[in-house]
Image (cartoon, rainbow, N blue to C red):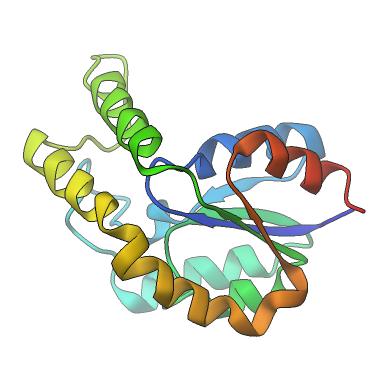
Length: 169
């Protein structure tokens, strides 16, 4: 069984969904790296946590005997890749990701939602960034992860990823 799981993929690829399901199935706390990257004291995106605070929060998570982390980040998360038992990369189709991002935007508009909220302009910028992900970001991610091929598993859908992580070969 895997004790330290890192899930990486584009926005809307299903990272948070898989992390929540794995957390429930394996009884291991899941951590969204957006909560470290974006200032937790601000109720909107756009203001990053200072690097020292973010590094301390990350080190605290890494010190746990088991964890699940998910995020798009690959430039400051090398310690996560090094410690992970498995790295799950989600390569979900762009139009499915767009649909999920738009759905999430409207879900977060409800009054009962208490987390960070994106503005409409932030949603548009995210959709543009997401559409360019395969061409601009993915090659960088793959380069960083190339040294971890022995623990990297790539999936096009969350169901296959869940099955592979819960029942490793």
